[in-house]
Image 1: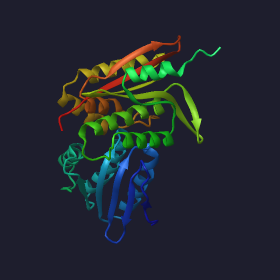
Image 2 (image 1 turned 135 degrees about the vertical axis):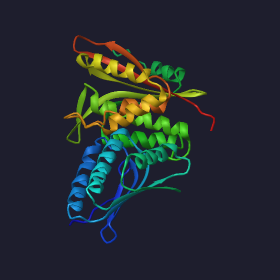
Image 3 (image 1 turned 180 degrees about the horizontal axis):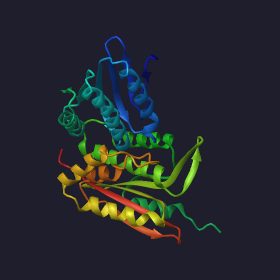
Length: 123
Length: 185
């Protein structure tokens, strides 16, 4: 499978995947003019990866997401949730800055809504 | 004869406490440049400064609205983008972010209804609607999340203002304005 790696830009996330550990990292801010252009290839990659039945950990460290990026990220997480519901091994680690209530709340809402494990880590 | 005087423009901006303004095509590069300008102007870096982060978020959502929904279109780097105007007003105890662009008259009624509905909701109900919209499937052919306006009102904490200036039987200029009160922090 092709390695997944995207450097951050001013308004898109850094994406890195450690194939050995099965850890997918997303970090930074996201407010591109078209969020779907950015997220669609990621979703395709994820569907491909989980079709092989492997475990995946999603490490998320986001500082700011605009509304369409938020929607795209939740769609992406939903793919992971469906994988987990069907018996796949998936979990999320959600990092948030200590006084960032918005990002903290978003992580808490995810933890509440999802059946897959969500760990919240302030930094 | 050209009667436009820059001094009038300057005076107006001075009187209205406009600290940042842009009129033109909102491409991805423009969006990045505007965000950079905002960050420098307000010494903003995504963390801390709760009020400024709210203003930033609204500023980006409104700029994106222009990009997606303005009826006046342009082509930049082979991509179709929207044309509009966006300004930030900064007073002693509040910020106001305003955007303006052309829209087709046919979309005004549903848009105004949607805004009235969002404006009428209490904080908790607004959050419910936000979560519901985030989870609902996208409308076909729409690239926006459909949650931009809700995000703006949630961040603003005030009703979203709408002013319409009819241009002709096809088009109207729409002004959206969101006020963010300065918090004690």
